[in-house]
Image (cartoon, rainbow, N blue to C red; front, side):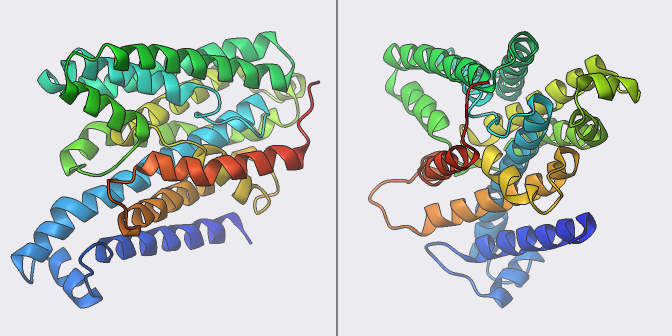
Length: 329
């Protein structure tokens, strides 16, 4: 399958998943009612459900997944590590911590843009730390352990904040953010976080030739004209913007960034540069599908998207790691 055909197939499946998510829920909606609501016709209740609730939720899920998929593919190519992804390497944890700090101090309620700005800043700081460490250590396992350490430290600080939450409402907001969810997201939330995600993905897509060149090794890549410093900076910037925007929009959603690149890699000749775009589309599709599952599974309380993603993604992550026979070098 050619790259173009793969992208067309994934884009079509993603669009079909989004359309299906608009019609599914506690109150099902047929295709005719759905189309009428989308064009502003039909009962007012249908239009409200579609435009104010389900469409923003589906778009938020797709954008969040696409950001994590593109970031995971780019980080795996940059670090030449198939187990790298924002959640495993601590990027998501630091970004979530930065966003949580704005909730803890009540800054997000007084100045809404500060939450995505904090999430993006946290993601970029964590990505820069990883890049610095990757240049110092040669062991893949050591780099993964550093990422686990960053995740643990950010988790510990977050637990401290939860422990000293100033009131129950703030505590509830912080917990909801750490568990990941796209419920109650509106078009204004997408307008705040969407530009960061779009810019981050665009930068990552633009670096696909650099990622392909890095498969030859850094020395060979230099000889064919690759500016390594500039390439690293662009990938760090793109992954930070995309991951931070995703965290700002949906909170923590783990493992999507590692699963999507792994699933598409065999269809693009294991070329990390050709993995970025299909990974973004597939990850977006998977998160929308997971959100549909969250809405349809009958539970006494609200089931969080991040919880479902972790329940599905963690066993797959173990399977991927076991298949590759991860060994310390």
